[in-house]
Length: 121
Image (tube, rainbow, N blue to C red):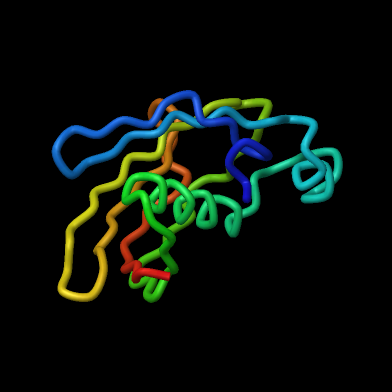
């Protein structure tokens, strides 16, 4: 689990089917120190994993990623330049799961754009 470990959630709220979470990085976390020593960046897999955790919290149930139809890493997320970031994601219920469209950004810097599908775990 990366929430409350690498990422500290400062808020998670919904407006209709769109959720927004503000995350604060823990700059001393070992993942950051080991990923490009001397120039830490948030690994892309961690950005995707925390999205899964946020989707599970929003739905109040365990989920698993079943399809990632679009994953675009647009900029590196470095803790010194952006100690916080906002994840905005839309949940659309499907017959067997949920479609998720998400953007992870800090102000005008977009780190990740994602489109995919989650299923109940």
